[in-house]
Length: 510
Ligand code: G3P
Image (tube, rainbow, N blue to C red; front, side):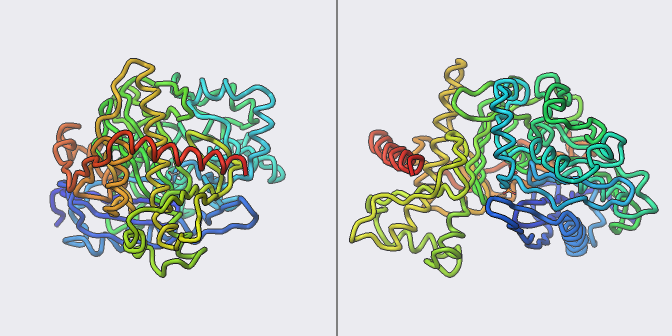
């Protein structure tokens, strides 16, 4: 006998792992399963994932989490999917086989395509239509590269034989029938507005695939997924995949999902996720606010029937990954968790400033050619100073984003951000969070549930499947675990930011 739905399964397919979490409707974690995702770096600047492996890991973790949940997951009433954004998959609709490894968001192989499009004068057009800019980060030039490189693929795409999708679309298609020949015909090929807004092909104002940009990149429209609200019943899981057939009630890019999980769904609320990179998003309500400070305008998650919602976004390419580099590149620590102790063993960074521009610099600088730089080294500098400077670099980069955001918001007559909600692995680091509050001069607030990406996907799915009364019900579930109040005088914080900007100039000159 099945019981009344009281929990939701969230799939969180990220850059470094595939996770499945069962949440009670109160937001409490009931069960979790996770697998690390192998990374492939076939050439300098290239990053690939195996779409088959993504699928295999994701369905395995979903089954494992359901098996661990109370009553074997019998109370689960919906599935929500959150995904690493921009990562590009191209597959054959008839066989379900990917034509190529997934090209990951971090991959820089299309820098030349971006430069050529820029030379054609397309940047302003791209900005106005998509809220993005011409950078290899986004899916559009990755898809163009695939169609240029794989013989006959553009013609096959035009005939409707191929499907393009970000990882949400790939997982939806597989879950809804694509994984098996007997159910493939019913597989659903779709994405949500948030993921679509990261492709470079979606017009965030007209809410449609943009014909001008599709022409400029020579992309046949027959390849593209249908676009719906993030909270929407997209399909049901195909029979036999999970113990029960479940509605797939949400798709959302992981940063949009985290923003929703942080209950930042009203204008003025901002969150920063400290993962491999850092992603700072500020909700701007129904206004697609253009940035004059190097930020992106992007679609926020929205509910079925709700008007389009927007956010300003800044992305830092190397956030927590700088700690991995201390561990794997420099062998300064044996495990990531040791960094806080090492950094705290000195009172400050001793004048050392670390700009971890390993893959160029993202917003607000957008310099693909910048390289990592450490300044201020003296005879007295130790590994502890470098570790402290590495941690501080995460906060400096995030502070530069927030300053850019405040400039944009104030130029449009709005109020500066009053507090920053934080999540992601490195938000557990108290030293980092305190320094972040000190630099920003506003409180930094850490919520009780740090799995906000998966939680956001769960809430969005629960909403479309009738498990919550509305946004207010979800908002009332958000609770702070700790507030970090700024403790540094504004003049000192400003002096520290100037040290950072000075080091950035050196990284750009190198
Ligand atoms: O835009 C890329 C972002 O969605 C990746 O997030 O958490 O998988 O590193 P994450």
